[in-house]
Length: 226
Image 1 (cartoon, rainbow, N blue to C red):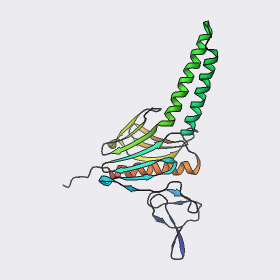
Image 2: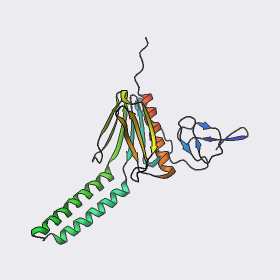
Image 3: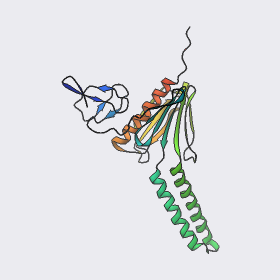
Image 4: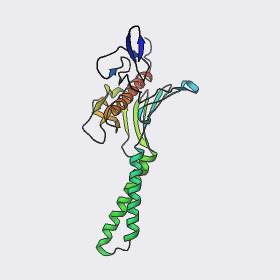
């Protein structure tokens, strides 16, 4: 909390702006619109590092990295590493079963092939979650969202001229409790899914939402003077 005269005010953990106090448990920043508990430590800590050519880096909640460069902003959202470990363990267990029953013959061979298929699938998903990130890039032409180096979702490209609004919303999905979407003439297009639920997930989604909107503003082509 920050004292301003006799009344306490809350400092936003993301942008550092000071917001007036509120009677509700959570305060919404008047600048970046982040909702936060003024009595607790922030889930995302601003740690900007200035590098060559005006590059700035910031660490967000849930391990998210935000890099600002002239003409391009990059948001890196790590995949679920713990879930990746689980998938790898399951794959190893299926491989052990395969070694035990590889002498199957006749019609039973199809079950063995199915076992191998599931083992390979779990191995791929597990390794992908361990090594891959969702990388969202914003430049003067478009927003792109690419999962890699081992992709688990399709690539997304959205032209700037298509975007009417970017927003974060809560869903009924257990896989992605929150998503960040762009409203376009083609309908809403998901830019990023947030797998964390609760207040932490809401703050993570709001962080990504604000970063995308700020990136669109920062990388927009200047309008030539008439």
